[in-house]
Length: 445
Image (cartoon, rainbow, N blue to C red; front, side, top):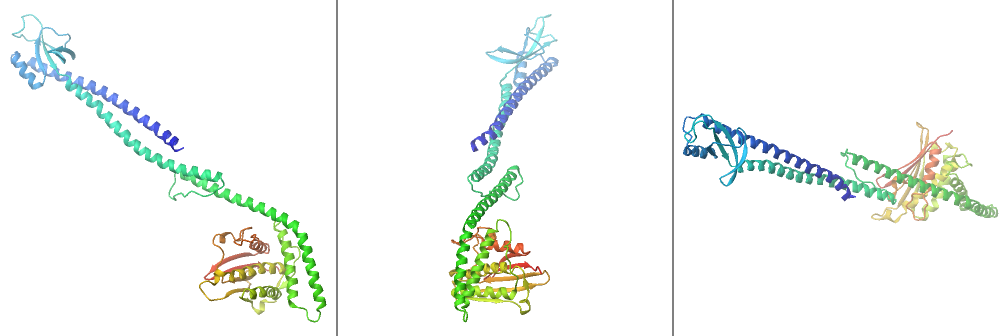
C-alpha cells in the first residue's frame, strides 16, 4: 500500500516538474538564441555605420586597430553574399558571424565606379556561450528545484502514508474483532483526521454492538437455563420447606430461631428465581408483600448477622425511630435487593486485601433515611473493603459484568433494575476507605 500511494503521489508531480523544466529550458534557449543573434547584428551594424561616416581613411592598419577595440575584424571588400543582414561565412580558417553594408565613399583600394562594402567578422563563440548559459541556467535551476520539491513531497507523502497505514491497520484489527481506536490530535482538521475519527466512532459502535449481542446471547442462554432449572429448584426448595416446617411442629414449645431464618432464606431464594425469570421481560416479581421499614430491617439483620459473625465482620443497621413504621409496598423485593448489597459488602469487608497494612476489622453499615422533599426511601450500604475492581467499576450495573470467578454478574444489574422499576435508582461511590451503595425507591403510598 505505502509503495503504491507514494508512487501515485510522486510520479505525476515529478513528471510534471520535469516536463515544465524541459519546456522552460527549450523556450529560454530559443529566446536567448534569437536575442544573441539580434544583439550581434546590431553591434556589427552600428560599428560599420560609424566607420562609414568617419573622416579617417579606411586603410587596413586603421581597420585592424578599430577591430582590436571592437573584438572583430573589419574589411573593405568588393563583393558580399548579402548586405544589411547577419550571415555566416568561412574565412581565415574559421567560421564567423558576418555583416556587410554598402560603402558610399571612394576608397584608395577600390576602383573608381565600382561598388565597395564594409564587412565585419565576429567570432560566434561569445554568442554560443551566452546561448549555452541561457540553456544550462534554467535547466540546472529546474533540476535543483525538482530535487528539492521531490524531497519535500516525499516527506509529505510519507507523513500522509503513515497516517493511512495506521488507519489501514485499525480497519484490519476491526475486521479481526479488535476494536482499539487510533489517537487523533485534537487540533487536526484535515480529511484523514476526520476519516480516522469516523473509523474510531465506527469501532466504538461495533464494540458496543458486539457487547450487546454477546449480552443478549448470554441473557437468552440464562433465560433458557433458568426456565429449565426453575421447576427442579422449586421442587427442591419446597421439599426443604416441608422438612423445616416438620421440625418446627415437633418443637412447638421452643422453636429454633435459626429455622425461621432458614425458611426466610428459602423464600428469598424462590423470589430470586422468579425475579431472574422476569429479567428478560423487564417485569417485576408477581408476589409482593407490604412491609414496614422495621420489618424489613429485622429480616435483613436476621439474615445478615450469622454471615457477618462467621466472617468476623462488625455489622450495624440503623434508622431513626420515627421512620421505622413507614410502609413499603414492595417489601419483598426491597429485602432481596438490600440483602444482595449487604452480603456483597460483607464479602468485600472480609476480603484479605482489606486487612493488609492495618489491624482494623471489617465493617459493614446499613442506614435508612427518609427523604421527604423527594418522597424517596434511601438505604446507604457501605463497607471498608478494598472497593470494586477498577477494570469493571464503570460497568458494574451491566449484566454479566463481575470480578468474581464464580459469579455471573446479575446481582447488581437486577438490583438496579428493581430500583428503576420502583421509581428510584442505584448508585455507588468511593469515599476515602469506604465504598457506599445508595439504593433509593419512590414512596408509593
